[in-house]
Image (tube, rainbow, N blue to C red; front, side, top):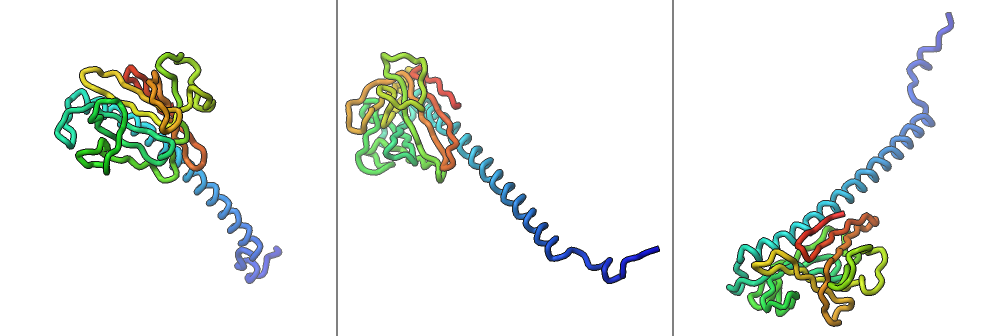
Length: 209
């Protein structure tokens, strides 16, 4: 019976076979790492969207439970969104009762309405703000179509005791006149384009899609 020489049987992988195996391993590793990164990216944006909704609930609870502010008063509470500061949101106490965020110094200062600044995840930004004005329809809101009057540059969503409803104030351009809205949509996006939309309603309801 014919047998290969002992030296041939123990030779193992050739150089070409080894290179092919290493290349396949490299391709599979790249696919796995990419898939894992995308998964983490989506999980991060999903989690952040629900956290933003929770901040709205926190503002509502703070107002209704008569939480004392840093200056000793019992104001309404809200959250501030602005496209010009797209990497953060502000949780604030409405000290002057105008349902809008006003800055006067630094966050945490007794004279400033800002109670804390909430930084978004690295690479995640507020990519769009839109909604319906108080007299507008609630049908067909879609931040893909940022045409007036739906487009906004900033939103303040404030809760005041004893009413659980939200006061939504928006501006189409920073510095323009503030107008009441019936709904506010905040779209957050990752660097890779994954998006989530948080919608606040004047009824106090909030949804994440």
